[in-house]
Image (cartoon, rainbow, N blue to C red):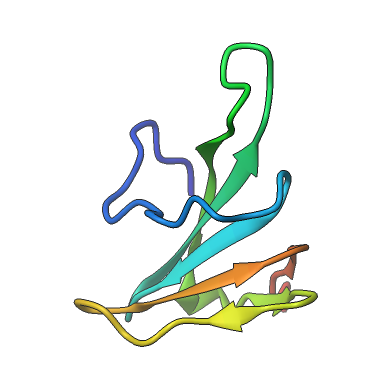
Length: 89
């Protein structure tokens, strides 16, 4: 599922390692951002990566993950790495 605009909420944490991930999980979807440092953003910025529909039963793999307390309708997980596999059956 492709989303052309950045969904809400967006990550607010800035004390992160470049190229790490923020994953927001709500009852219906999973939203993924990556923290990138580049020439136009030398201090780093969150960039939206993808949306996963939870009905597709995504399986996430993360290293050094830090789950945060629930907020609103979901919760954040900050992770050094991120990989996803969808149920293809």
